[in-house]
Length: 69
Image (cartoon, rainbow, N blue to C red; front, side, top):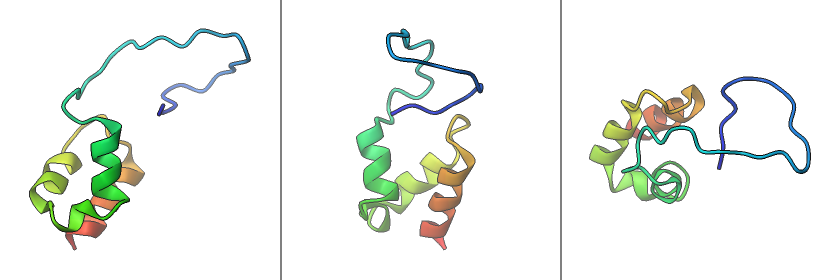
């Protein structure tokens, strides 16, 4: 799973390299479970912590806020 930070062009054969992993304790599977798969209803503390992550995209922060409402 990738997030576009800077617009540009990519094509088949281009190399994608991991440059930074700012929150390794938050694997995509855990974030997905909290925000999409329903685990967030049971794990409110985790959703609160997730919402504070700086690198998390704004739409996902909004989704976390919805789950806490």
